[in-house]
Image (cartoon, rainbow, N blue to C red; front, side, top):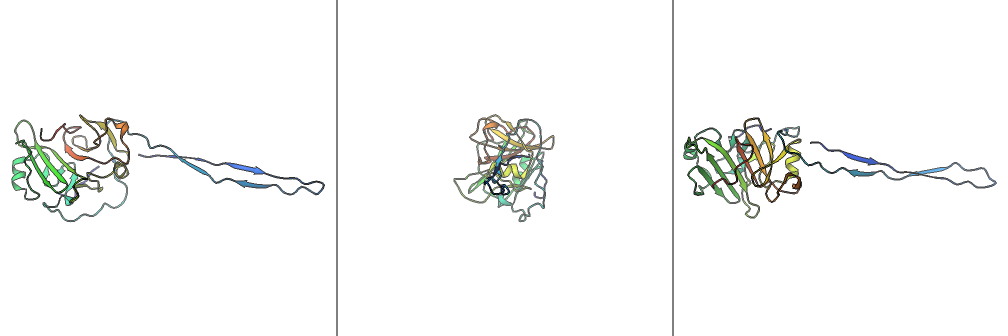
Length: 232
């Protein structure tokens, strides 16, 4: 389930220079040539603009894509996040069949028969089928806990994982936009039919997000924003 492609801001700075001129004249001797000195330029960076809600997609930073270890079902750090799903689970395919074939991190029953969830130290991962009992996966979600160190979670092809700083997300996907979800704001990538959402917990609006905030969880779904709860 690796080798997938995810998808798409720019800023500016203002420069001010101060030039100070000084000179002296002695009498009755001829006036000496004036001397000139200049102050060092002062750089004043502009604040980073807040991304506004609306459709959009980021583009990865130019350069070679990172190389990753071979996919290992027992090692979430080798799983890829893209528009088709996360790691061992693919959108649009049977949840029951994929769950039956998955032999990786331990199963973690969250009490919802429509959800297959799994956990290992520091990583929680879930796949949810549609509500009409068709059995097809409509959402895949991964999150990591900073309070429980363990194996890093799944990554996008640009190397972004749950737990990374928002500043790293913005650097990896220049132009990425944000919108408000049911409970928290999300940065998102979309191909027009599927959304990869990067949730920012602890913030009530897009305008409150700071570059030092962390990505709380990453979901791949057919909806523009993930639901309030995965197992609820």
